[in-house]
Structures are given as structure tokens and as C-alpha cells.
Image (cartoon, rainbow, N blue to C red; front, side):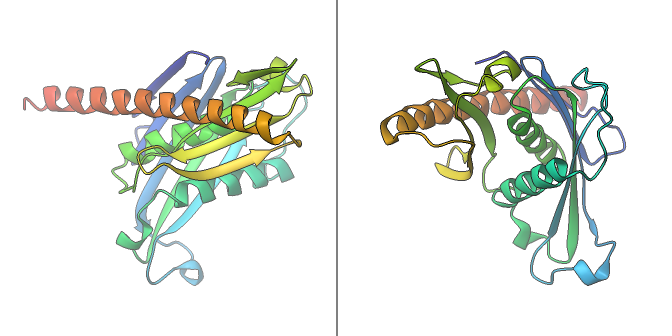
Length: 223
């Protein structure tokens, strides 16, 4: 697995925020809420409304092509992240409210979907949003007859099949599973197990980051 780095509280005006890096992939996330629903027609009486917006910075890939806001891929990834995060947020505790999650890719080098989910998890925790469990994500693939964990862009674009997985590690539940090609069952099981191990390693790292952040807050308050 590539090196992991994370910071919390990077966006001052957000209720929660984080920067999460997986190798050369770097993502920033900001969470606002729970707050009053802006569009009353979208208000849900027994749970919170979760909204998510994903985007890529124009400079994130080094590609000079302008990335249009609201393009099909961004809309699809926004939906994937929202559904993944909804599986962990205790929305029933915050009825008639709204939670907005914004994620932006600052540097893209493979695994952006997973990095966005991990960044969103940290930002939600920073905002104090109640969750069943943290949700973590990692990709794994199969290239040159070898299972690979946390693929970078070069490995991902080599044409081998890959799996993007999201789990609730303590509850041992899968919240996201995406495949871009067919795999024989025995190979799929190996790749899937590798992705699970990656998710659990990321969960341990995220818990360490949250614990360190809590300790720093306690120190500043003189507790």
C-alpha cells in the first residue's frame, strides 16, 4: 500500500474538514451540517438529508483539458460517495436537517474514489456527525497474474481488472463494491481479500489520526 497522510481541520469555516493522501493522490473534504434544509421540498421528516458534491481541480492531473462541473463521471462519483457515507451516518438522529459533503481531488494518481471516501470519513468525524462506524475504502487489482493493492494511475490504466471496496470495519459490513471487469471466482476472492486488508489498515490509520487530534484538542484546552 502507498503511504498514507492525513490532516484534520483544514477548512476553517466548515463544520468538519480533512485532507487525505494515498501516495500521490490528494483529496480535500469539507462537511457542513447538520443544518436547516435549504430546499424545504427535499426535507425528510424522520432522517437527515445527505448531499455530496465531488469535483476535480483543473490542475489535478496535469491534463490541460478543462473539466466541466457536473459532468457525468463527477455526478456518478458524487452519488457513490453519498450512498457510501449514508450507510455509516446515523441519519435518524438528525431529522429535518441537511448534511453537505464536498470533496475535491487536488492531485490524481489512481484511487481517487477511495481517497475521497476516506477524506469524507475524517471530515464527518471532525464535524461530530454521529456514525455507526467509520467507513474506509481501498482498491485492489489483478495485473500480470499478480494481485495488487491500492493501484496508482499507471497500474490502474494498464488494463487489468480492479475492485474498489468500502467497508464498515468494526461491523464487518461492505458499503461499496465496484468492479470494472469480470474475474474468475478464485482470483476475485484473492483480490477482494487484499482490498479488505487494505481497508482495515486504513481504518487503523484513521483511528490513529482521530486519537492524535483528540489528544491535541485536550492539550490545548488544558485537560
